Length: 304
Image (cartoon, rainbow, N blue to C red):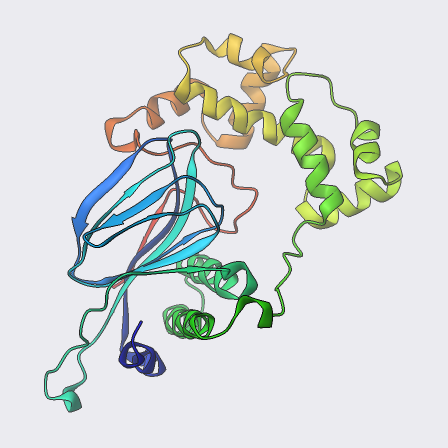
C-alpha cells in the first residue's frame, strides 16, 4: 500500500464492499490468471506450498500471510498440490471523492504481509465475514470500519520489525485441547475414549471435559463424531468407495448409525452430499468443517 491508499482508509464511508468469503479449495487447483478492477485482500491462515504469481513476482505462501492485490494487476494462485488450502478474502474499492477532481487512487503493486498472526487482522477479517452473514444492525458500516482497521494494521506491520509486536494469542483453543483434537484426527478409525483424550491433554477426566466444552462449545464425544463425519465428507468426494466402506473407514461400527448421524450433522444424506459436491461448479472446493467459524464456509457474501 502507498500512503495515499492508507490515507483513504480513514474515509471508510467511501469504502464499497463487493464480495467476501471463506473457502477451502482442493489440492492442486489453479485460480487465474485473472485481472480485476477492484482491490482484494486475501488471508491465508496456514502456511502451505501455495504460490502467488504475477508479472513481476512469484511468492510461496509458506507462512500465514495476507496478500493485497490492486486493480489492474494480472495474477494467479497455484494452490498446494498436497493438501486443501483455506483462504479468506474480501473484494472492495473506494468510491471516487468528488473533491479530488475525478482523480482515482493509483493502482499499487501487490504486496504480501507475513507475521499477520501478530496483529488483529485475522480477527478483523473473521468478524467482517460474521457480520456479512448475520446482517445485524449497522452491519455494513461496521464491516467497512473493520476493513479500514485491518488495512491500517497491515500498514503498521510494514513499518515495524516483528520483534516489536506483542503477539495476539489465539485463545479459542488451549494447547491441551488442540493436542486432544489432533489425537482424534490421527485415530479416527480406532475406538477413542475420553479417558485417553484427557491423558493426551495431561488433565484429569473431569477437568478435561470441562475445558474441552469451554473451548470448543461441544462435548468431547460430540467432537469425535463431528470429526468422523468431516473425514467422511472428504472421502465421499475424493474416493469412489461405497458409503458403507466410508462409514467403517472413519470409525463407525454401525452403518445405519452413520446414516442417521450424517443426516443430523449435515442436513442431507451422504449420497446427496456426494452428488452436491461432485457438481462441476463445486469441483475445486474441498469439504470443510464448520467447527472453527461462526459463519457458513465455502459460501459467497455479496454486498449491495
